[in-house]
Length: 385
Image (cartoon, rainbow, N blue to C red; front, side):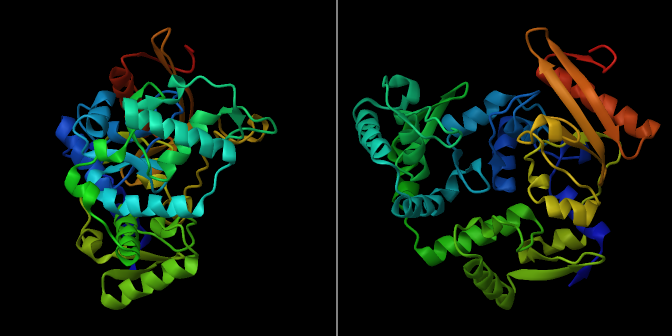
């Protein structure tokens, strides 16, 4: 099937269901619906003006407050934290499939003896005394953690909890700020879901289809294609079977070299995407679902974006935490925002516009003012900061 770049762009933006474009999700129920529709909301701890996961939902759910996501994750348990794109909030109904993946992680990943020893102690404490956090354990044993350099700085119990979570032996049951508490899965997941088992074929098919639906339009060059930790040939072989059965359609996008794929259930929306308002701007969170594939941004939007958080300061082109500005179906520029909560301020530190018009600047100003209201901060301009 052949489509234009304009069709691809309209579809991808429409699939996001941003409030600025007429999205209908509201309040607590809207958070639940958004997570289920999106398939995954990426969780990230960095908080320059707002954390990624809260920004993703703020942009889509009217009346959103951060505690609403916490309610879905830890009280109603309609969602839980697991790994697909990265650590994400995912619908609880996906648990049997992700549990299969986590069991495979346990079979394939071998931590150090120190971490295994700590894991046994931690798991015993959780079983006997309920949910635990890393800070509940006092130890002098340090191991080499993910972010450590030459010197091992990570507490053994912290690494053990990460290992137990990665392998599905515990789930995150709550958070106190950024401190996670972990409990046994059977205390969090409903008995019916916990007892449900899937085999490898069911798992692979579910994950690839869920990935294709979550991404909207995707291409096999993406390193996390299919959310399957498997050789690319296995994923492409499964993709071919879906193409042959008509459950997935291959797309040629006019003027784009890469081939994209669309799940058959999304074709009606691809051919007739929702109308997109061009009145209100969206500050797109750096790990927003729209930005998951940076090649796709170039192909459909002509927009090059790199999140420079992990780029050395001297090599950054824009700044530490700079996000794209979306207006209608166009990515019109970039904005750098920073919150100072002690002083009660939200600063617009920099604004780079590729389309510098009064309409665009007015839309950006309104979006910044609305964000400041949500954060309960006073907005200041670059000249005031």
